[in-house]
Amino acid sequence: MAPAYSSYLRMFVMALFMFVLASSRVGALVTSTAILVRVDQSGKGDYRKIQDAIDAVPSDNKEPVFILVKPGIYQEKIVVPADKPFITISGLKANGTIITWNDGGEIFESPTFTVLASDFVARYLTIQNTLGARTKAVALRVSGDRAAFFGCRILAYQDTLLADNGRHYYKNCYIEGAVDFICGNAASLFEAKPLTYICIFFSEVPFTFTLKGDASITAQRRESPSEDTGFTFLGCKITGVRSALLGRPWGAYSRVVFALSYMSGAILPQGWDDWGDTSKQSTTFYREYKCYGPGANARKRVEWSGKLTTEEAEFFMTKNMIGGRSWIRSTPTHFKKASTATSNNPATHA
Image 1 (cartoon, rainbow, N blue to C red):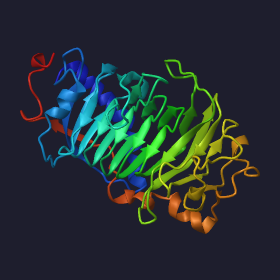
Image 2 (cartoon, one colour):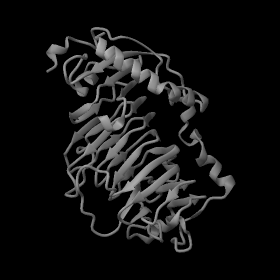
Image 3 (cartoon, rainbow, N blue to C red):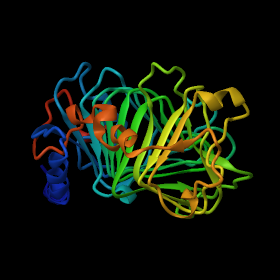
Image 4 (spheres, rainbow, N blue to C red):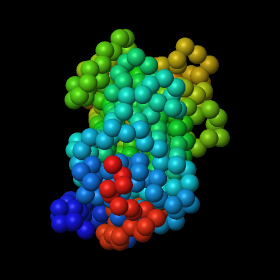
């Protein structure tokens, strides 16, 4: 291992040490050892591109693979295939490891980063689609089961995060967009200690959008009462420079819960919209629980949304809604060298 990269890895492990301890306290699975694969644009790692590192993981992989990405701007359109589970992709700081693309159009084809595999983890990455307000332009599509994201920044304009299918966990992430920018039919828990930021056309984004009219944060697509899907936002902070609804129903049985979350004045007083179909008012499940801030005032909320009681809220206040205690895993504490199946001469990966 090169001295510079050895130093970088030591810094990485030290920075995550406290996080590992915290994760284990809340029931995360402890993954003590993983295969280490290094991505470095300078050529000092195993690969120069993130996709090359993913491609080198064997099909039907059974062993944790930790892809450590050195800081830089990676202009890549990335896919984690369905036959490559147990992959972690990690930077050290989200604002230093940026994965960017600018595709748009069809919602399932436009993402900068697509996860089709199960048991996937991303840590400390920025994933962005810079196309802007011209059309649907997804930053992150997650269609695999048991996927977790820690400390990531997910940025786009419309349909930023397509939480498509499966069970997903987002902790301490920053999610930014304008139109239906958290959408799909996954069972997703957005949790923060202290805060996950959900920003509506926020000024931090490094490119400019123009938002005309009101927008919606969520477009959840639950289509049947038998589906155990929905979005729960626990302890989040919602802010922005434009107004927005909390959600509107992409599916007739759309289910979204905001609990213990701060809502700025960017949230419109009515809170929710039926997307022009009054029949969905009786089938959607839109609830709030002990939220606070100027946007949490419920006096003008639509009458077909509601508040959860303490007893009702219990189900949404833990990882039980996604079965997370059985599959969310912590950062490995030990690493071993990649085999020839997952590592090659970096000079061949220009």
